[in-house]
Image 1 (cartoon, rainbow, N blue to C red):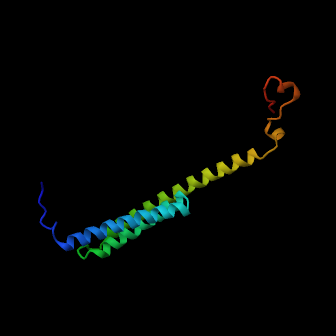
Image 2 (image 1 turned 180 degrees about the vertical axis):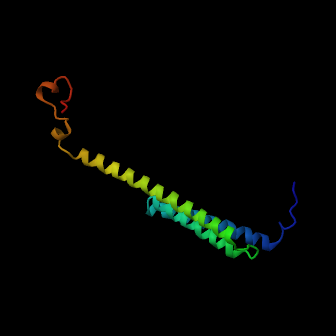
Image 3 (image 1 turned 60 degrees about the vertical axis):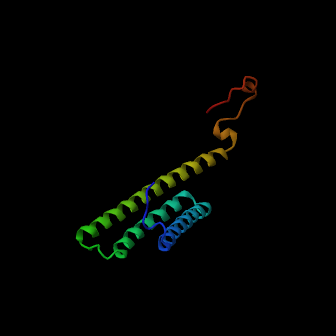
Length: 130
C-alpha cells in the first residue's frame, strides 16, 4: 500500500473536502440549469464558464507571464468556444424549424395533406394522393 505523507494532516482533508463539495455544487448547478433550460442554454453556460476559467487561471497563479503568445492562445481558445457555440445554436434552430414545420403540416386538414380517403379506397385501405 502506498503511504502518503500528508494523508493525516487536517489541511489535506479540508482541501479534499472543499474540492469534493465544489464538484458536487457544480454538478448540481448543471443539473438545475438543464432542468430549467434546454441543452443549448446549458452548453452556452458551460462554454462561457470555460472562458472565465481560462482567464481566471491566468491571474490566479503568479508564475504565469502574460505575453503575446498567451493572449493569442486565450483569444484562439475563446474564439473556438464561441464558434462551437454558434454552430450548435444554428443546429438547434434548424432542428426547431424542422420540428415546427412538421407540426404545422400535421395540423393541415386531411384533404390538403392528400390523406383523404375516398369511399372507393376506404374498402381497400389505400389513401388518395395528390
